[in-house]
Length: 141
Image (cartoon, rainbow, N blue to C red):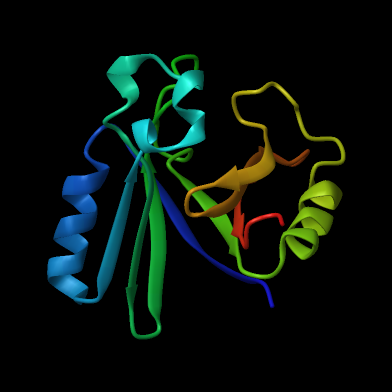
């Protein structure tokens, strides 16, 4: 079953912000650094300590975040959040991803095909209407 949750983008202070939110809401926080993923070779070493995926869950409250990684796009009000589609099998997530990808700009910066990461499968895109989507589900077997 798929569900949606907010996804926040920070400019280098994701871990600090998410720890603050954990102190407010309680719950379990997981932080994954870019250097701890197979994606690390896509980024210069200076970005390896940035957070690629943070997840906070406290009861029914749940949201995720990342540090800004793109050099060609800068964070400005309006592009620092996404709709986060979570759950389901890889195939279920991939089906929805492929449908939303129709007409999306496939630039390798805002479009990342779904693939396995240490925290599950992951992908992202900006659809033809300019809405940012991020996907996380079970690993592809």
